[in-house]
Length: 395
Ligand code: SAH
Image (cartoon, rainbow, N blue to C red):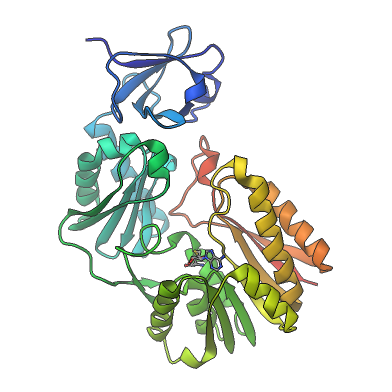
């Protein structure tokens, strides 16, 4: 039987030769063989030369994602088991004592579309490419065997599934259903994570190091935590000595969970004002009230999933950062983030510079921030570096 294959247009093999794993539909000259969603295809250059073994995704703009660039290493059960084991082992090296962490970071761990987060003994996967969904059971077995955990829950319900043409799937994959609140400890602080109902897999593990950094600078009077979700930064600010925190999120459910997380860490309740509101609106109101803060966190949701939406996203970032600079006391600190894939570090820094200029604030970058070591970026996949942040100090 003929091996299914995609033959690329002349010149379109360049990205693959640099080992970038995505094949866009516009690069494909023709498809041959019985091609089904998620199954393995051989990728050939126009001259017939082998480029990689990929998983086929007929409805996506990304027609295939390469899992192996080596002709002698096929995309099979043993490759997946080996990649999963290697990913888990890398975390053991960098984060040996951390019990809540990302174990698999998709393309950057050689497993396109596979995310796995660990919360204690509970694993949570999100399979968001046709190949990842196709290999679901093999990935599940490999995860259980690499970690020794018994419980694996699937949260394949992100918006990108539709683009990939795969059906959402949510529920236990191995073992029992998760607890309503899974307890985790992060840098000695306690959080309850809702694996079933929370965003993504329940918690924004990518901000672990930055939350800890906020704690270090929080022995101040007034902290403002914008887009607080379940209170990750707020809890750290309180533990770091903040006398008062104003925490804003548009989701009542998130704020309720955040208040519980605060209560799990001490008698802090009276030091927090929870505000259920739109951050864009509320920042204007705080400005009109002439409020001032020593430390501000801006950790908005993804404004631009793709580069095409970068311009609109840039306006959103500029707006909230401009207002934040106006609300910052002299000498105050701004922790500002973007998790938009479509906004790179360079553009983000330009937006923040423009915001400070228009706010009439002099400020310096004191640190460039990003996700922790459990969210590595493969050098052949710069898109993996999605979380960027700046720690700015107002003059
Ligand atoms: N800082 C958090 C993660 C933030 S996630 C942490 O460390 O855990 C982004 C949050 O922004 C979500 O909780 C979402 O409910 C909220 N959100 C989205 N748009 C918003 C808006 N316009 N105003 C206020 N909150 C918003």
